[in-house]
Structure formats: structure tokens, C-alpha cells
Length: 329
Picture 1: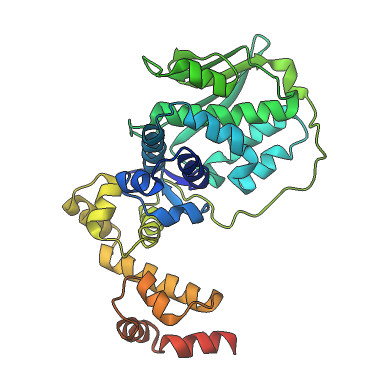
Picture 2: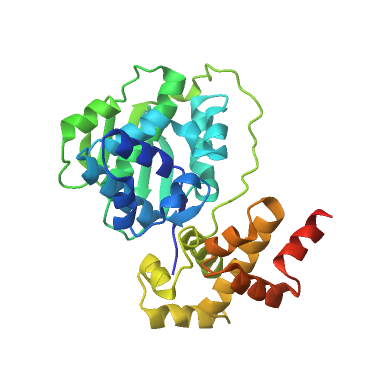
């Protein structure tokens, strides 16, 4: 099983767009079965399929099929964290596109494929969702096209229009509004792509180029690393409450027994992985924040501070207050 994950970088702009249009952000996230606090955690990792669901639900909530195009073009590729900053700091357009292709799976999202090819004097930038999810696929491609066009226009000017742009699908709802938002026409083909004159690849960066080799604190794990991907999803669920095994089953589209077998194959259980995540998060909050212990207890799903304190002492041999004092003494 391969688990495609993505940074939650687009969630804040999605929420802002829904609020501006008078929609309910809470309803959008509730329909996608995602914690609302994800808006405040842009470096959290989530299933790519869940991001597709949120974007799809947001577009429906406010009746704007062009929402994905507006999101990516308004926020710009620089909003994607160290990944976007490094792309924008490239010396030439060709370097920027190739760097974006090379870094996407490590620093932004997996379960997608991006490529840059040159043939007969034309350059094609292609993007495809390799995750099996169907919901929101076309809107995710439109979101990606917006980011690609943003890179192109950073180098070639705000008025740049590609020779051709496409997305997958048999139909495109509200084509006119989407084309207006993207600033170019769209064709329906087998995938998302942008085509332009290959000579543009040598265009130098009009902005000053600085050392943007930033360290990404949360690289995206290999989709084949089940335990690490599951750990990130469990931590995601902890943003709202203590996640149940059934919540994780929904994230992974697995039955309870199938998920249990996968944990057993790796010599562990869901309960053990949840406990490890709770211990890690408790230590992180105690060491790096001034949050009251009672609030930390509630954040981690404990009914009262005393229950949390007993659990923490069982994990570490030390009460949380003493552990925090030891970290700062």
C-alpha cells in the first residue's frame, strides 16, 4: 500500500476564500472529515485525497468552480513554503521548473507526478495525480496549473499566455470562469499540462536571486513507509481529538481488520502507535510551549489533568510538571 501525503499549505487560502464568499469553513472541513485546526498548521501532512476532498467541498460550498485557479494564482508558488521559495529563487525559468519537478515529492506532496519535456521547440510541463482518488482530481489539476502559470509569469511577465493548457476529464464545469481565472484557454485531454516556446526556458529571473537552500523541517515521507505515514496521519487526527482506529480506517480506505493486519505485519498495533504519538506530542508541548498542563491534557484527549499526569508518569517515570521543569532547569 502506498500512502500519498501532501503539506497542508493550501488549507489556509481555502478557508480565507470560503470566508470571503460567506460560506462555512467548519462545514467544508466537517464534510471532508478533517480537523479545522489544520488551517493553522500549514506544514502538517495529510492525505492528498483529503486535500482533494476539501477543495472540492469548498468549491461547492461557495458555488465557485474556479476556486482552485484563484487559490493558486492569488497565493502564488512562494506560499508553498521552502519548496516554493527555492523554486522562485532559481536563476532561470528552466532551472525553476526542473527544480520544482525534482523536489515536489520530497518537500511538498507524493502521489503526484510532474515533468518537464522539450520536443520540436516546445516545452511541456505536465502534472498528474497518481493517487487512486477520483473526487476532486480535476480541481487539483487546476490548482496545480495555477501554480505552474504563476512560475511562468514570474519569469515571463504577468501577461504571459501559454500556447496551450489542458486538464483531464470529459467535461469542465464553468469553463469560462476557470479560463478567466487562469488567464488562458483550456483543453480537455488525458492530464494537466502547459505548453510554451522552449526558448523561454533560458529566461533569467527578473528578481534578485538569493541563497534559498532552506531546510524543510517536515519532509514528506516515502508513500511506501506505512508506519511513518500512519504516524503522520495519527498526529493529524490529534489536532481535533484523539483519533480512533475507525478514523484512520477512513483516511486509508481500509476495513478495521485490514488495518490491524498491516500494523501486525510491522510488528506493532494501532494502540501502540497512538501511544507513541501521544508521548511525543506531550513532550513537545511541555518542552517548547508555555501551555498549561490542563490544556495540554485536553488537547491530547484526556478528560482531566490528573488522568494525563498519571499516563505521562507511566510513560516517562516522571510527572509532566517535573519533566517540564527538568527540561528548562
